[in-house]
Length: 438
Image (cartoon, rainbow, N blue to C red; front, side, top):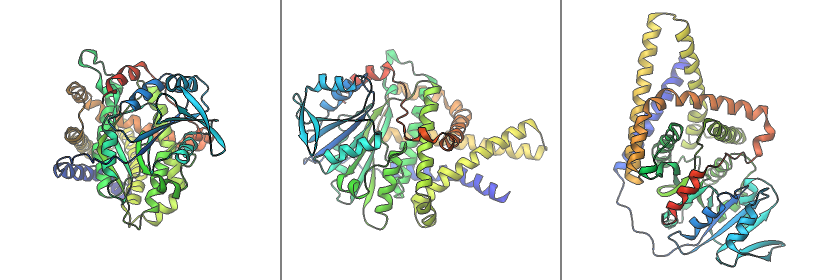
């Protein structure tokens, strides 16, 4: 019983620690430094699989970046739809021979290239792009992501320090940017917006301060090409973003090299708009986490007590999941079988503490987010309306996902290497036009 009580205590106190840590960082935040006049060249890698509905919007976004020194490399991973045809029509591609294979260059935009692969998966697509890239700095971007016009300028600033080997940006959900007159954000979308705000403006800021970043989001990350080559590139797994970040962290653990988090560098992505797609997306995330945890378990155990990365990855991602499951089961049993008034009082007290702390955590995340990047005021108003759902319902839904994702990873291992993409919606295409100019 003491072990369970200890785990429950840890699962309660660690979010408070992250909240305080992030608030201190936000209050100490210095004025934003001016952009560097010298623009380092970036190679932007965009793997594509069946993206014909949105590839033109991605191209428009890349064309309109407020940055000059970059190239864009689309890697078509054996799409079965019209992705390659759309790329050809928009970019006016010309084939040329490069290192024993044919690739394509745009005749309309000389810094745009296309690699046409057979279906090998996202990781191998990124590896092909890394080998082709001409820049010492690599940006990885999802095809359904749009960069803020100044995102590369912020990333450029990050790599002025030669000890920075990788950097991650902040991800905003694009559905939160609908114009006021069109605002009709679904509750499920608003829950995810708040979830992202908490993740990127408390948890990631706190982990970065401890040099314990475990995930540079696959939606938007930047890396030195030489470090990607040194770690052997991407492994074939659903959690390729977790995997590459952990590879780099373990390689640089006894050096002065660091991974940076840039909350000012902003990327917009689409989130699922129904429970089925959300379930599918989070299952994929959980499978990727389980795969990486098992693959690097010896490293985590070996460095558990002397490395923040191992401690947080092991304790928060694994043990806190266990305590959440226990808490849910315990709650269910107590509600059905009233053992004693004393237990009920303890349970009610603990539940009240968790609710208050979760609400404070959400308010702190919103406050910090406003010091870096803003959603429209109307979106924040929608967020306040779903606080009760976020406190009482959403955590239980996520807990079920963690359990199902873990079970399905072992039960149906054949699907653990698939793209497993969610359904696209027209909202993304409409709002993408808003970000042509940032």
